[in-house]
Amino acid sequence: MNIVVLDGFALNPGDLDWTELESLGTVTIYDRTSDDEILSRIRKADIVLTNKTPLTSEILYQCPSLKMISVLATGYDIIDLMACNALGIVVCNVPDYGTKSVSQMTMALLLEVCNQVGYHAQRVKQGQWIHSKDWCFWDIPSIELDQKTMGIIGYGRIGQNTAKLAKAFGMNVLALGHKNFREDVPYVDMKTLCQQSDVIVLHCSLTAETYHLINEQTLSWMKPGSILINNARGDLVDETALANALNTNHIYAAALDVVSKEPMEKNNPLLKAKNCFITPHMSWASLEARQRILNTTIENIKGFLNSKPIHQVKMNQ
Image (cartoon, rainbow, N blue to C red):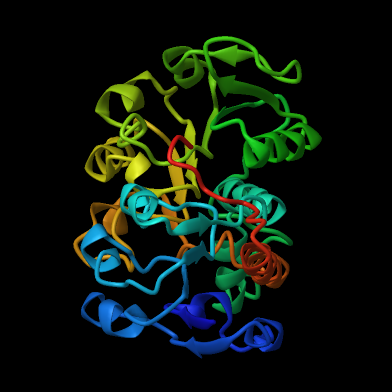
Protein backbone atom coordinates (compact mmCIF):
# COMPACT_ATOMS: atom_id res chain seq x y z
CA MET A 1 0.00 0.00 0.00
CA ASN A 2 1.21 3.47 -0.88
CA ILE A 3 0.33 5.65 2.14
CA VAL A 4 0.75 9.43 2.06
CA VAL A 5 0.52 11.74 5.07
CA LEU A 6 -0.18 15.27 3.85
CA ASP A 7 0.25 17.32 7.03
CA GLY A 8 2.01 15.21 9.62
CA PHE A 9 3.83 17.89 11.60
CA ALA A 10 0.84 19.14 13.59
CA LEU A 11 0.15 15.58 14.78
CA ASN A 12 3.76 14.59 15.25
CA PRO A 13 6.35 17.35 15.59
CA GLY A 14 8.81 14.68 16.73
CA ASP A 15 7.43 13.28 19.97
CA LEU A 16 5.45 10.38 18.46
CA ASP A 17 6.64 7.28 16.59
CA TRP A 18 5.55 6.57 13.01
CA THR A 19 7.02 3.03 13.04
CA GLU A 20 3.77 1.08 13.30
CA LEU A 21 2.22 3.12 10.50
CA GLU A 22 5.28 2.45 8.36
CA SER A 23 4.79 -1.29 8.87
CA LEU A 24 1.51 -1.10 6.94
CA GLY A 25 2.95 -0.03 3.60
CA THR A 26 5.24 2.40 1.83
CA VAL A 27 4.74 5.61 3.80
CA THR A 28 5.60 9.14 2.67
CA ILE A 29 5.19 11.81 5.34
CA TYR A 30 4.97 15.51 4.51
CA ASP A 31 5.05 18.03 7.33
CA ARG A 32 2.77 20.36 5.37
CA THR A 33 1.17 20.44 1.93
CA SER A 34 0.06 23.56 0.09
CA ASP A 35 -3.01 23.47 -2.13
CA ASP A 36 -0.96 23.37 -5.32
CA GLU A 37 1.05 20.38 -4.05
CA ILE A 38 -1.85 18.11 -3.09
CA LEU A 39 -2.52 16.43 -6.42
CA SER A 40 1.10 15.63 -7.25
CA ARG A 41 1.60 14.10 -3.82
CA ILE A 42 -1.45 11.82 -3.75
CA ARG A 43 -2.07 11.03 -7.43
CA LYS A 44 -0.63 7.51 -6.99
CA ALA A 45 -1.57 7.00 -3.32
CA ASP A 46 -3.75 4.14 -2.11
CA ILE A 47 -4.35 5.67 1.32
CA VAL A 48 -4.15 9.34 2.31
CA LEU A 49 -3.97 10.74 5.83
CA THR A 50 -4.94 14.38 6.26
CA ASN A 51 -5.87 16.72 9.07
CA LYS A 52 -6.57 20.15 7.58
CA THR A 53 -5.36 19.70 3.99
CA PRO A 54 -8.54 19.73 1.87
CA LEU A 55 -9.43 16.95 -0.56
CA THR A 56 -11.90 18.34 -3.07
CA SER A 57 -13.81 16.54 -5.80
CA GLU A 58 -11.51 18.12 -8.39
CA ILE A 59 -8.52 16.48 -6.71
CA LEU A 60 -10.20 13.17 -5.91
CA TYR A 61 -11.36 12.48 -9.46
CA GLN A 62 -7.73 12.64 -10.57
CA CYS A 63 -6.54 9.98 -8.12
CA PRO A 64 -7.60 6.61 -9.57
CA SER A 65 -5.54 4.60 -7.07
CA LEU A 66 -7.05 6.20 -3.98
CA LYS A 67 -9.03 3.74 -1.89
CA MET A 68 -9.10 5.22 1.60
CA ILE A 69 -8.83 8.57 3.38
CA SER A 70 -8.27 8.62 7.12
CA VAL A 71 -8.75 12.00 8.76
CA LEU A 72 -6.31 12.74 11.58
CA ALA A 73 -9.09 14.42 13.53
CA THR A 74 -12.80 14.15 14.27
CA GLY A 75 -14.07 16.78 11.83
CA TYR A 76 -14.17 15.80 8.16
CA ASP A 77 -15.53 18.95 6.52
CA ILE A 78 -12.32 19.22 4.47
CA ILE A 79 -13.28 16.03 2.60
CA ASP A 80 -15.78 15.99 -0.30
CA LEU A 81 -17.83 13.04 0.92
CA MET A 82 -20.10 13.04 -2.10
CA ALA A 83 -17.13 12.56 -4.42
CA CYS A 84 -15.71 9.85 -2.16
CA ASN A 85 -19.04 8.04 -2.18
CA ALA A 86 -19.22 8.20 -5.98
CA LEU A 87 -15.64 6.96 -6.31
CA GLY A 88 -15.94 4.22 -3.68
CA ILE A 89 -13.32 5.81 -1.43
CA VAL A 90 -13.68 4.81 2.23
CA VAL A 91 -13.39 7.75 4.64
CA CYS A 92 -12.61 7.22 8.33
CA ASN A 93 -12.01 9.63 11.20
CA VAL A 94 -11.02 9.62 14.87
CA PRO A 95 -14.25 10.30 16.76
CA ASP A 96 -13.14 10.35 20.38
CA TYR A 97 -9.54 11.30 21.01
CA GLY A 98 -9.60 14.73 22.64
CA THR A 99 -12.60 14.80 24.96
CA LYS A 100 -10.56 15.21 28.14
CA SER A 101 -7.98 17.54 26.62
CA VAL A 102 -10.50 19.87 25.00
CA SER A 103 -12.62 20.08 28.16
CA GLN A 104 -9.51 20.76 30.22
CA MET A 105 -8.59 23.60 27.88
CA THR A 106 -12.11 24.98 28.13
CA MET A 107 -11.70 25.33 31.86
CA ALA A 108 -8.15 26.68 31.46
CA LEU A 109 -9.49 29.44 29.20
CA LEU A 110 -12.28 30.20 31.65
CA LEU A 111 -9.94 30.26 34.64
CA GLU A 112 -7.55 32.58 32.82
CA VAL A 113 -10.40 35.02 32.30
CA CYS A 114 -11.52 34.69 35.92
CA ASN A 115 -8.11 34.73 37.65
CA GLN A 116 -5.75 36.34 35.13
CA VAL A 117 -2.90 34.07 36.24
CA GLY A 118 -0.70 34.79 33.23
CA TYR A 119 -1.11 38.55 33.57
CA HIS A 120 -0.34 38.65 37.29
CA ALA A 121 2.60 36.25 36.94
CA GLN A 122 4.06 38.62 34.36
CA ARG A 123 3.47 41.61 36.67
CA VAL A 124 5.43 39.83 39.40
CA LYS A 125 8.36 39.30 37.01
CA GLN A 126 8.18 42.99 36.11
CA GLY A 127 8.77 43.86 39.78
CA GLN A 128 5.26 44.90 40.77
CA TRP A 129 5.20 42.68 43.87
CA ILE A 130 8.74 43.52 44.90
CA HIS A 131 7.83 47.20 45.02
CA SER A 132 4.35 46.70 46.44
CA LYS A 133 3.48 48.56 49.65
CA ASP A 134 1.28 45.64 50.67
CA TRP A 135 1.87 41.91 51.09
CA CYS A 136 -0.42 41.23 48.13
CA PHE A 137 -1.73 42.99 45.05
CA TRP A 138 -4.04 42.48 42.12
CA ASP A 139 -4.77 44.74 39.21
CA ILE A 140 -7.92 42.85 38.18
CA PRO A 141 -10.27 41.30 40.76
CA SER A 142 -10.85 37.55 40.45
CA ILE A 143 -14.23 36.07 39.56
CA GLU A 144 -15.59 33.16 41.61
CA LEU A 145 -17.35 30.48 39.55
CA ASP A 146 -19.35 28.89 42.35
CA GLN A 147 -23.10 29.27 41.70
CA LYS A 148 -22.52 30.87 38.32
CA THR A 149 -24.33 29.31 35.33
CA MET A 150 -22.58 27.77 32.34
CA GLY A 151 -24.55 27.34 29.14
CA ILE A 152 -23.12 24.67 26.84
CA ILE A 153 -23.91 24.67 23.12
CA GLY A 154 -23.10 21.20 21.81
CA TYR A 155 -23.81 18.62 24.50
CA GLY A 156 -21.97 15.63 23.08
CA ARG A 157 -19.00 13.87 24.64
CA ILE A 158 -16.96 17.04 25.10
CA GLY A 159 -19.90 19.11 26.30
CA GLN A 160 -20.86 16.48 28.85
CA ASN A 161 -17.30 16.24 30.15
CA THR A 162 -17.05 20.02 30.43
CA ALA A 163 -20.32 19.99 32.40
CA LYS A 164 -18.74 17.61 34.92
CA LEU A 165 -15.77 19.93 35.37
CA ALA A 166 -18.02 22.99 35.68
CA LYS A 167 -20.13 21.26 38.32
CA ALA A 168 -16.95 20.44 40.26
CA PHE A 169 -16.46 24.22 40.54
CA GLY A 170 -20.00 24.57 41.89
CA MET A 171 -21.48 25.87 38.66
CA ASN A 172 -24.99 25.30 37.40
CA VAL A 173 -25.18 23.98 33.84
CA LEU A 174 -27.66 24.45 31.00
CA ALA A 175 -27.52 22.87 27.54
CA LEU A 176 -28.97 24.04 24.25
CA GLY A 177 -31.83 21.87 23.05
CA HIS A 178 -35.57 21.74 22.63
CA LYS A 179 -36.12 18.68 24.77
CA ASN A 180 -34.11 16.82 27.37
CA PHE A 181 -32.10 14.00 25.87
CA ARG A 182 -30.23 13.54 29.14
CA GLU A 183 -31.29 14.04 32.73
CA ASP A 184 -28.09 15.59 34.11
CA VAL A 185 -28.77 19.15 32.85
CA PRO A 186 -31.82 21.17 31.80
CA TYR A 187 -32.19 21.83 28.07
CA VAL A 188 -33.27 25.32 27.01
CA ASP A 189 -33.61 27.29 23.79
CA MET A 190 -30.92 29.64 22.50
CA LYS A 191 -32.43 32.85 23.82
CA THR A 192 -32.97 31.41 27.29
CA LEU A 193 -29.46 29.99 27.38
CA CYS A 194 -27.98 33.38 26.46
CA GLN A 195 -30.11 35.26 28.97
CA GLN A 196 -29.46 32.92 31.89
CA SER A 197 -25.78 32.00 31.42
CA ASP A 198 -22.83 33.75 33.02
CA VAL A 199 -20.53 31.70 30.80
CA ILE A 200 -21.38 30.34 27.35
CA VAL A 201 -19.22 27.53 25.98
CA LEU A 202 -19.23 26.38 22.35
CA HIS A 203 -18.68 22.65 21.80
CA CYS A 204 -20.81 22.17 18.68
CA SER A 205 -19.71 21.24 15.18
CA LEU A 206 -19.67 23.74 12.32
CA THR A 207 -22.59 23.30 9.94
CA ALA A 208 -24.69 25.57 7.76
CA GLU A 209 -27.04 25.94 10.74
CA THR A 210 -24.34 26.81 13.29
CA TYR A 211 -22.30 29.18 11.10
CA HIS A 212 -22.15 32.52 12.99
CA LEU A 213 -24.37 31.09 15.72
CA ILE A 214 -22.87 33.77 17.93
CA ASN A 215 -23.86 36.94 16.15
CA GLU A 216 -25.19 40.43 16.84
CA GLN A 217 -28.60 39.05 17.82
CA THR A 218 -27.44 36.27 20.14
CA LEU A 219 -24.79 38.53 21.68
CA SER A 220 -27.53 41.07 22.47
CA TRP A 221 -29.32 38.35 24.45
CA MET A 222 -26.26 37.62 26.60
CA LYS A 223 -26.08 38.98 30.13
CA PRO A 224 -23.94 42.09 30.64
CA GLY A 225 -20.66 40.92 32.14
CA SER A 226 -20.91 37.40 30.71
CA ILE A 227 -18.07 35.36 29.22
CA LEU A 228 -17.86 33.49 25.91
CA ILE A 229 -15.56 30.47 25.47
CA ASN A 230 -14.96 28.95 22.03
CA ASN A 231 -12.54 26.10 21.45
CA ALA A 232 -14.69 24.37 18.83
CA ARG A 233 -14.67 26.12 15.42
CA GLY A 234 -13.89 29.74 14.61
CA ASP A 235 -16.76 30.26 12.18
CA LEU A 236 -19.30 29.62 14.91
CA VAL A 237 -18.69 33.26 15.84
CA ASP A 238 -19.25 36.47 13.90
CA GLU A 239 -15.93 37.99 14.89
CA THR A 240 -16.86 41.59 14.07
CA ALA A 241 -20.01 41.34 16.18
CA LEU A 242 -18.05 39.79 19.06
CA ALA A 243 -15.37 42.50 18.90
CA ASN A 244 -18.09 45.14 19.07
CA ALA A 245 -19.73 43.45 22.06
CA LEU A 246 -16.39 43.37 23.88
CA ASN A 247 -15.38 46.92 22.99
CA THR A 248 -18.72 48.33 24.13
CA ASN A 249 -18.51 46.33 27.40
CA HIS A 250 -21.74 44.48 26.64
CA ILE A 251 -20.02 41.23 27.56
CA TYR A 252 -17.06 41.02 29.92
CA ALA A 253 -14.65 38.74 28.07
CA ALA A 254 -14.11 36.13 25.39
CA ALA A 255 -11.56 33.32 25.43
CA LEU A 256 -10.96 31.68 22.08
CA ASP A 257 -8.75 28.85 20.89
CA VAL A 258 -10.04 29.07 17.33
CA VAL A 259 -10.70 31.83 14.80
CA SER A 260 -12.33 31.96 11.39
CA LYS A 261 -9.08 31.97 9.41
CA GLU A 262 -6.11 29.98 10.68
CA PRO A 263 -3.30 30.86 10.99
CA MET A 264 -4.82 34.07 12.34
CA GLU A 265 -4.73 37.08 10.05
CA LYS A 266 -3.30 40.38 11.27
CA ASN A 267 -6.51 42.26 10.49
CA ASN A 268 -8.75 40.02 12.60
CA PRO A 269 -10.85 42.43 14.71
CA LEU A 270 -10.45 40.27 17.80
CA LEU A 271 -6.71 40.95 18.02
CA LYS A 272 -7.44 44.46 19.28
CA ALA A 273 -10.71 43.75 21.07
CA LYS A 274 -10.94 44.47 24.79
CA ASN A 275 -10.56 41.56 27.19
CA CYS A 276 -10.21 38.97 24.43
CA PHE A 277 -7.94 36.01 25.22
CA ILE A 278 -6.74 34.05 22.19
CA THR A 279 -4.70 30.85 22.04
CA PRO A 280 -3.48 29.18 18.81
CA HIS A 281 -5.84 26.20 18.29
CA MET A 282 -4.07 24.01 20.84
CA SER A 283 -6.96 22.42 22.79
CA TRP A 284 -6.64 19.14 20.89
CA ALA A 285 -2.86 18.87 21.02
CA SER A 286 -1.87 17.21 24.28
CA LEU A 287 0.65 14.40 23.81
CA GLU A 288 -1.92 11.91 25.06
CA ALA A 289 -4.61 13.08 22.62
CA ARG A 290 -2.24 13.07 19.64
CA GLN A 291 -1.09 9.55 20.52
CA ARG A 292 -4.72 8.44 20.51
CA ILE A 293 -5.16 9.96 17.04
CA LEU A 294 -2.18 8.02 15.72
CA ASN A 295 -3.26 4.78 17.42
CA THR A 296 -6.83 5.04 16.11
CA THR A 297 -5.67 5.96 12.61
CA ILE A 298 -3.50 2.85 12.51
CA GLU A 299 -6.50 0.77 13.62
CA ASN A 300 -8.59 2.47 10.92
CA ILE A 301 -6.10 1.42 8.25
CA LYS A 302 -5.82 -2.12 9.61
CA GLY A 303 -9.60 -2.42 9.59
CA PHE A 304 -9.77 -1.21 6.00
CA LEU A 305 -7.03 -3.61 4.89
CA ASN A 306 -8.99 -6.45 6.50
CA SER A 307 -12.18 -5.33 4.71
CA LYS A 308 -13.72 -4.34 8.05
CA PRO A 309 -13.59 -0.52 8.14
CA ILE A 310 -14.04 1.11 11.54
CA HIS A 311 -14.94 4.73 12.32
CA GLN A 312 -16.17 5.03 8.77
CA VAL A 313 -17.82 8.34 7.90
CA LYS A 314 -21.12 7.93 6.06
CA MET A 315 -22.82 10.44 3.80
CA ASN A 316 -25.71 11.02 6.21
CA GLN A 317 -23.52 11.74 9.24
